[in-house]
Image (cartoon, rainbow, N blue to C red; front, side, top):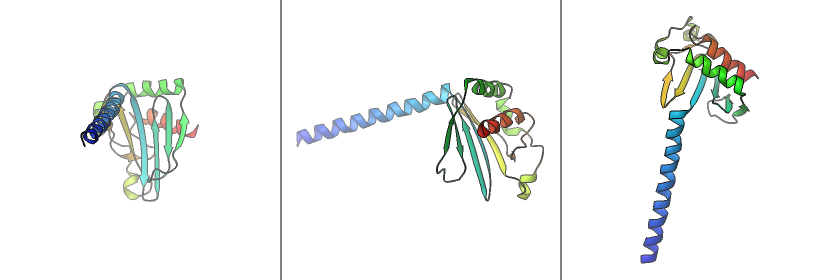
Length: 148
């Protein structure tokens, strides 16, 4: 009986230490990495492009089945970083979209999310492929990465 309790205690400690190390990796990612997520959707359409330093992931459905993974070059990633640095990220949620066609179901809703140094910053909604002028170059670059 004492042996059984000892084994169970060791298993519990091992599981707990593994959980801590996984949480640490997630926390480390949040503080050191940059991730860009462009998402566009409407009733019959869904598209998400996620860009990190080493990869680009394209998802075509809400269930996130069969994502398309690709790689990104250093030059393309550097362009992403430079474009993000030109944007005032603190005011990204207050930017005004140049058109409102998404409200009449003529085009999809879109949103840009920037995850940087542990902060998740989301833009206001805008028409798919027609972002606020401050985000236009970055959104165009992300969509061009998806095409390549």
